[in-house]
Amino acid sequence: MTLAAAPGRSARRRRAATPYVLLAPTVVMLTILFAVPAVYNVWLALHKVTPYDALGEGDYVGVANFESVLANPLTPLSARNTVVWLAFATVALRLVLGLGLAVLLQHSVLRRMRVLGVARTIVLLPWMVPPTVAVAAWKWLLDGRTGLVNKILLQTGAIPEGIPFFADLTWVWPSIVAVFVWRELPFVVISFMAGLQAISAEQYEAASIDGADGWRSFWHITLPNLRPIIAVIGLFITIGAFNNFIYVWLTTGGGPGTFTQVLATQLFTTAFVDNHLGGGAAIGLLMSGFMLVFAAVYLLTVLRRGDD
Image 1 (tube, rainbow, N blue to C red):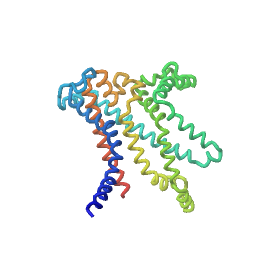
Image 2 (image 1 turned 60 degrees about the horizontal axis):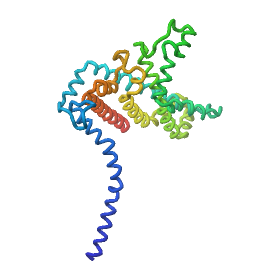
Image 3 (image 1 turned 180 degrees about the vertical axis):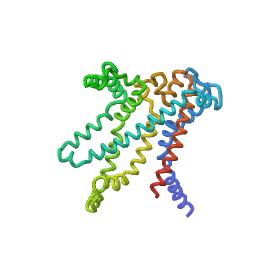
Image 4 (image 1 turned 90 degrees about the vertical axis):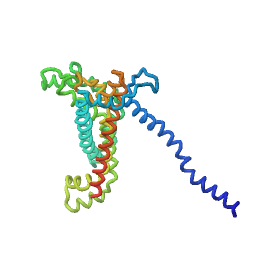
């Protein structure tokens, strides 16, 4: 009995260990790609390090890097621009426009006209363009002297002289937001289209029988069914917008002056222009901490409303 039981126990142990063995490569990969850089970033934030120091070199300074970042007069401006323009304006516009376009693209008129596929392709085109190419194209379109937009406005008499959209303090942020929304909007549209297709037609038929018009059906059927998607997409694109670097950096470089500086560009400038890696790491950790708190509050609020 003892000899017969031993192989059985060994087989059970092997079966019990199998999931851990299969998960081990994934855990190792995640540790290398995420945990190690995160820990190293914390180490950088607590040391005075330059890009020219060898790995592991640097003087320990404690929280001095964080104090320097918080005392920097540029930080409040960068934080305000990040929250107001990147994390609010672009997110709100993408949610509203994305939902509107998704509803239009689901309309039966497009099917009857047999242009539904063409319309969806046109909407997806900006997402196929690399961000650097998109920014280059928009910088040409909005150029103050040779841009197509200014030429049209001048020829129609809408403006007396060309507007340098990416240099004028009045127009620079709306211009950056326009580029950002144009390039990133298709992702939101696709997500909402998937959600709309999951809503059963019976719900709309029942509402129509009860005398509900299009607006009431949208308000009482479409929006409630899309609420989980809106919650997830809203969080996802907010995090992406808050951490975004490329659109501001490639259009204005944070200018004119520091007018369009955001936290991501301040991080880059601090770390790789001023050669202060510790300060850049401190900005990155502050950004991560802020988004962690935001995500927790956001999800708790959404889940509580969902339960209600």
